[in-house]
Image: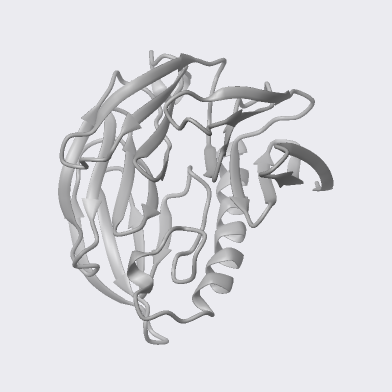
Length: 253
């Protein structure tokens, strides 16, 4: 029931944000960040995302691409990736795909047929991922569905996407979804709450705040507003990049 609830909430949030993003036009919209037009912004636990004129979905083993430039979506390709695929996150001209055994990087230079670039492998564990600049942030967690994984936050150097490499790893409690915007990194700790990090140095996240009074499973930072989904409902916080503060706005149960 909890997973179904999170899926419904994630769908509603990504749908609203995708509609807002796709209403704007841009000549090179296929190669913009998730906060710019042409990219639908969902949570890091999402199994589907919109980038430009394409919708990408992942199942446990494959990725499917749909052309949505017309009123009737058209399936254009299907790519077998591997086992235990869990999440998909778009960034610029790439797709970052999380699985229980690693992070896959695919190119969108041909958006109708994404192509494999590389695989960063890790121990078996649940694995959402987000990216910004030359770095990707990956959370690994233990749990029933994730078998015997560790609870970690990994910082991955993707400056050369063909050879991603780990630069730092931090012990966590039970990390779930995460989000990044500018100098702030947000990491959901499940039943323990949410952590906010300063990533002025993107390789060395420094903990700024740990909000512990609710469950946090996934998060979407967008234009200074943080949307957090969890067992307790949907929370909104306002965050400020300059003074790195968080202000509670609302809760939808």
